[in-house]
Length: 193
Image: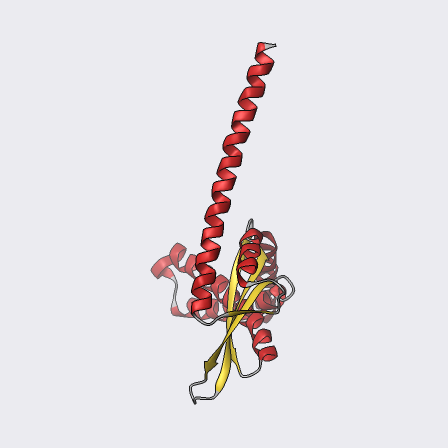
């Protein structure tokens, strides 16, 4: 009986510490959300396309990030609907470029100065095709978490809107999209040789 009570006591103490750690994490997250909300509001940013307030959207966004990757997009447009459409394309292009640079970095790191200029040109051509394939694969996988906007001015002085959108992509799905894009690009590359 004493062993059972002792085991129960150990479990309860462990739960208490876990609950306290989760509460501390929650308080830290709330402070981060409030600080970010204050910074964005001070900068003139407002939430767009959501019934949530900015701080609620940030809190939901941080909850969604567990096991996922954030991709940010920026756009400038005189019309809100066009700017919001440009956001996703910008985020996809940034992600594809990042993946291409990662591949190029691995190749140059592994082979160093042994890579000839002809080989580098071939790698660059491969990466151009790869960028397009990754963009096509990611098109439906990016999920908009939240979007903000503010009034701005174009270089010619015309009024416009600046947009920032934060998208969530599952890391495993992004990896599969990247692998599929590599396989498609390799197949096309072999067909052209």
